[in-house]
Image (cartoon, rainbow, N blue to C red; front, side, top):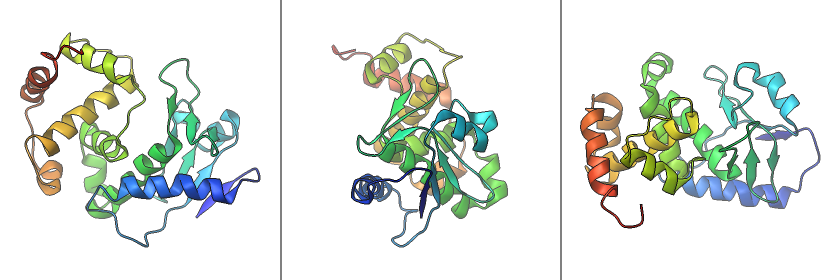
Amino acid sequence: MYYHSNDININELKLVLDKSEKLLKGTELFKIGITQDIFICSSYNEFTFFAPISRKAYGINNPISQNIFLTKSSISGNYILRNGDENNKYSLSGVIAHETVHSLLRNELGLLKYKLLPLWKNEGYCDFIANESSFDEKKGLTDICNDEVNSESASFKYFKFRKITQYLFEDRKVSLNKYLDEDFDLENINNNLKEKYCTQQSI
């Protein structure tokens, strides 16, 4: 179910949602027929009303109601713009997939275990399934190679979380249960990422 404060083109929205569903089929948690309430805001001010402490985000997923609220978006262009000066654009279908995965994880783990899930696993898995980050791919890999911290950039953190998650699933072939339940040596994984990406000429 979707909600929007303005009239929208249903056919254009269906194209976006179809792309989101295709992404969501990449996780074993997804089941055909699941429902998700999505509120698409028409302005930054409207989004701030629903998400006052996350007004700079692309969207939020309420962990109790599991309602998704998205900031200013273009349905016809399939993109969403957060209220920020940089790293402020993401595909709308990707954000819908990302936020829906939060609901799927919450349903799988239960609220308490979900709230205790490390941030890198939670956000990393959501971006992994969305197959996207707002941080520039080439710059992100360069920063990993150069041990840049970018401590002020949530966008870079999410990018790195996605790369860690991608490495665990695609290179180490871990299962979802192992990913969610086990502890991992992030320093070791960071070194593995550097070995994988930092010898390439394109970086």
